[in-house]
Image 1 (tube, rainbow, N blue to C red):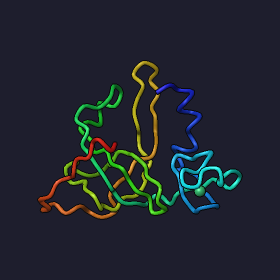
Image 2: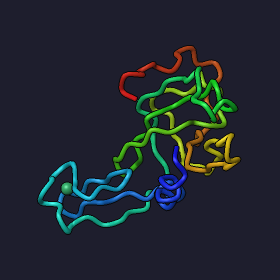
Image 3: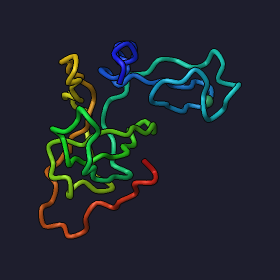
Image 4: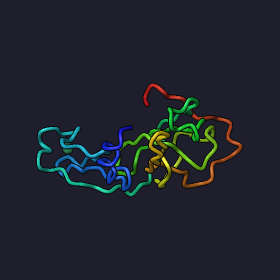
Length: 150
Ligand SMILES: [Zn+2]
């Protein structure tokens, strides 16, 4: 990821800031300039919104081949999290055995190291999610793989 783009996205990445449409009450993350629910009606009706950071896993997969610069994380669980407000975020799940991440798991946003640019030595930080409750170790059903959706 290019550095300028990263710094431009900083407030969004650090604070889980999205947008809320006051026309149709839809929430978006990342923030949008036009609502995906009511389109043109949303012009001038979008407000910045800071998400509470709690939500539920709706889809997940385990990444066994991390991208360059993310090697220290692999294998790691990557999930689509539906925030309590309704917006969906794709993020890494931390503090849990990858195989224990599954649909319906309650998670909360945490601030963690995202990756490292080996050439510049710059370390990226951002939002990841961690389980709210201790996952059940005996559960036999493993994470449903829906890679195509991510
Ligand atoms: Zn709308």
